[in-house]
Length: 315
Image 1 (cartoon, rainbow, N blue to C red):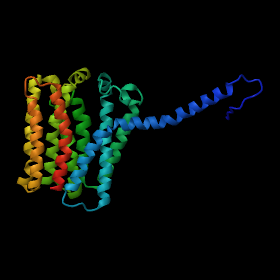
Image 2 (tube, rainbow, N blue to C red):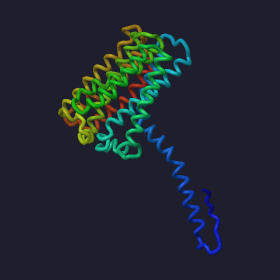
Image 3 (cartoon, one colour):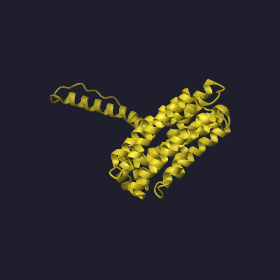
């Protein structure tokens, strides 16, 4: 069927232009629908978090003794990116009702109804299959198993566990720490001291990072019914946990020189970064400490990790 916006004898003044504007408006709406849905699908993948995880996976690849071919490295990074997006998408699908109750997440595509749950489930499942299949074909069985472990432990174990125990943060740190180890195994085919070091850095880094987030977003997590540490324990206890986790992280970060993985320059940089981290964490031990101190720990953790990893790669 064809439409015309031309006027005809006796037509009311302005009717042709009004009809033209209506048709143009409808066309623009139809054109924007696929773009809007694509934008919502990307949002489900949590782009900023995914980029951080992808950075750590690439770090494991770069830190390994050798990579047999550049193209395999590139394909590994792409497959890992799809795996991370799949895990985050499935996480949003599982937690869509919880997200609807929390201010921080209530505007996400699923709680607002901009995207249907079945679309999110299908998208996450498809990306998971594609990424794991690609890892199996391009890397090795060990890396593929680690990828599957990361996906299952994050989406099927950690995500539902958050509603029942504050120690879910320990479980959640495992899938978050696996990507750099995957990068290492993708390059070498086996575990190594360097791979385990990077795994430990990511594992221990997540603990003060996410517990600090739970402190200044405590009320929001309570609305969502999530038993994070700040909900389950007293403020003073949580602040002590943050400090202890930071001490363990800093101690772990100083191991490379002892293990022959890095030199003095790295150790100096790691020490300076660690001292600052400890200062921010220790400030939270004061009785007068509150959300501001927790936010400082969180913000410094965002700077600490990339600087530490770059120092390790250069050192």
